[in-house]
Length: 111
Image 1 (cartoon, rainbow, N blue to C red):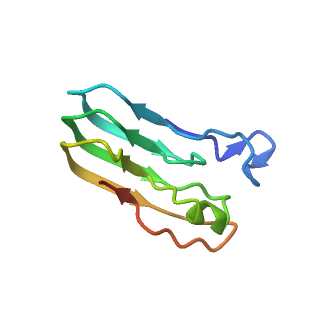
Image 2 (cartoon, rainbow, N blue to C red):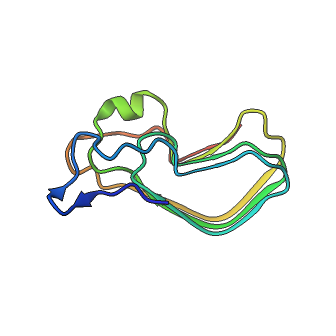
Image 3 (cartoon, rainbow, N blue to C red):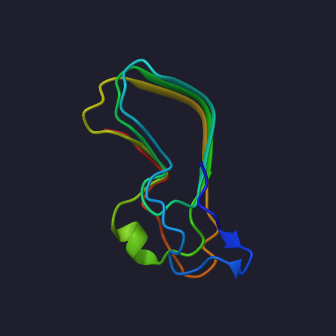
């Protein structure tokens, strides 16, 4: 899942090409293999189902957000507050905040 960070006209800036969430999982007993999500303007992955498992997840924060993105509490890998059981291996989150200085609280949030 990927929000375009460039177009034929050049770099995407100022939250153009809006995509809030790359993947939202609401079902129980779901397993994900080799997931990747980049540059969305909200939580990149939202996992709301119980007994989920992830085997490899990588993501990169959007280049063009400002500190309001961090202040809003967004993250890359978000396990929902009502989830009781979740497992994940090989989860990586990285950033290149090209346009503004942004200090994220966390790349991964779980209850």
